[in-house]
Image: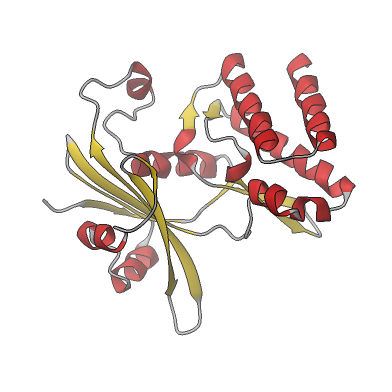
Length: 241
């Protein structure tokens, strides 16, 4: 069976064809040694050139296995029944992009099989090199002056508020999925990755879950007590308002 392919645009189609990434069999052969993140799921990267001089980093997310015979009600409600993680990532990426958030540039999503399936999504790396988790782990977070660190916390909180205001929620709201970049004119710019956790609908419980998950991830990433206290106070202020 030929895989079903959706391309972001003609440029993506040309780029992937030149790299033999428009064929699911070839993708799985090249990615066979990728480290499994979960059972049936792996991510690997490839450096490519789309001209003689322009070098780009592509990420390939693979997911394979068997779909649940009877979908969860939430999957039916979210129109995600029988959709693989790459297909959900493609959908979540679009939901966030439509409300003006920065996300990874999509290239293509490939899928074959109904009950037994294989799937892959290919996207370009986001511009910032490090996520918040990596900055906390390697100490580069502490190299940012205190005022900018607080502004970065405010920017992450504002991003979650924007998601909720659009009647969306995000199960991926963690320090590993925020990639910040400082702009002297505009302040902090954020890019979001792993958008498969984006969902339609938002209520108080979902908002609390997203902020609770975000706070816990900062704690697990090794944020200092002062940062955690500041973050807790900002979240508590939101919940009281």
